[in-house]
Image (tube, rainbow over all chains, first blue to last red; front, top):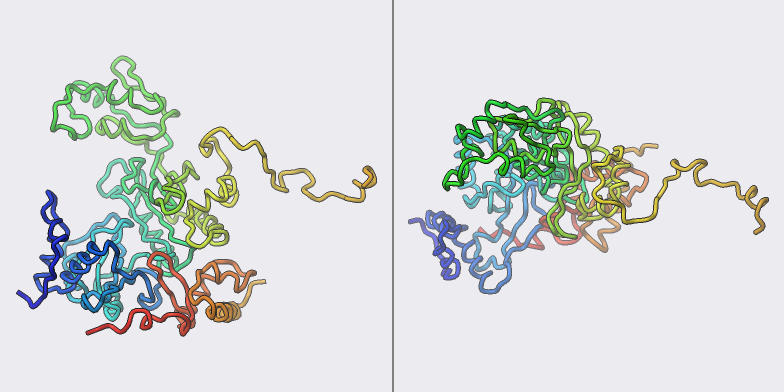
Length: 428
Length: 85
């Protein structure tokens, strides 16, 4: 065994006894193979459990030359006890779109990180980046060089930057995808390189791209700008396949839930009655859909994928302003553009992004997320700066505010009045 | 009238250096005040160029990025000490 020192960690060890694989086991195994960083990490974690306080210091002046993001500085505040993790910086690596890797690449990354860092990784961070955990300041530039020159990958976003755009698996594996999510994700990453690597905004900004309304990257819940594939025409129906589902020849839900006997498939109970807008019905043995009432919930398509498919007139719905609950609670994205064509080079979409970024950069407060600005300044104001016409879908509820605010250009003659003419008619 | 880039950069450094005596790390928003007539994006681009030139430096709070003037406030060494070998 390599010359390493294991700390006494009774509370961490307790975590190994649960029913699930434990991170303590993983880290300890790595440590006993010769990585003192890993054992020191567990030692410091144990101390944090004892003190019920973290022993990490966060932030600082770390980074690679020319980049303001991608490295998150971490320092131990008890370096004398755990010297090998005195510096324990995290590096974010921009994942390939949809996270397609080759095993050769992963091996190379792991070898490099074993050599230059703690050997510990996190696949993947919430934003989607590959996370390399724990290295020292003097290794940052060499790691950056290796990543960019040997592996042709870049650092991801952190800090007040555009965060690494993320997308679902898209057309690569999924028949429902209405968008080439990987192309969009790659294009946005390339177009906004400066915003991704250098602080540009009052706070972080996220793009996430889902190919269909199933929204597998949870764009609607997690991104400042959610791009979700949709269609404008009718759901495609294969009536023969509908009959096959009803007759039990094709398993519903692609065969999921087959571990229990739920009885015969009941299209009325399992599909039609669950349609949120009630826009489906059986006409004899034919399934009918009133497509103009469909809200793209995807339930019927998910249950009967062989019979129902999204339409072919495809594009995206754009929503803005989701965030986690740091201020004012969590918030889902709000609909901005119900349908936009998403075809390279995405000029219409990028124009929209430019407008909303200009607004946020001018009016956003320090550490104010885009969704919080929308909430603070109102949806009307957001629509005005984004140059979008209000539509019924923007309305969440009947108005509760009795005042109507007009802007000057909406009022005949504007705000200017001839005071002399007024006074000629009215005594002061 | 569009401001000359060098002029804008000088204004930012002057403003940041003055401010750094009281508060050594500032947000990008704070730097907008250096030249209210310039657009936020111009200031962002100029400030990032200044970092590349070494006249400003980034400071990460961990979740937000701030700007500092080298020599003011805590440097990395002051804050965290030399790396032990």
